[in-house]
Length: 175
Image (cartoon, rainbow, N blue to C red; front, side, top):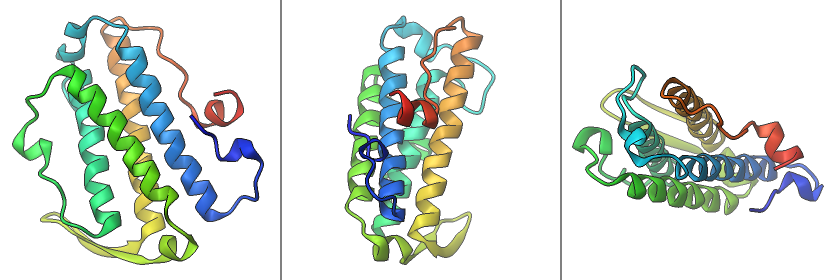
């Protein structure tokens, strides 16, 4: 996977946000590759957390990234897994989060400085407002990072003690 900062090009807002999106893709892919080596039944083991299993936490990350991409693109949001439920397999959840992370990174990569500064509208039943695309990108990527931490913690609670390093500094210095 490419690393924008590793290329030592001039750091712009667009290149930095692109690199964060590529990092997000890399980190999600890294977690999925790790989880694929574990017994599939552990992915649905119930634990006390924001979401009750590894699978449901990954589906939440995927679903939320789908939602924020629609906000960034100013198109109608796809049907929410959270509201409709997700009846897919663990493999489909793995594939979905990885593919969606690539789609999000590709979209962010396509934006120029002006696109990033543009204000976009968020309208949901819970909150509405207008903010720059930059701010919504930052929120989306931060949200995914937060829940990746929960994946590692859930994993540790069910005996998976060998989680991969997915810190941003590891990505741009070593990964």
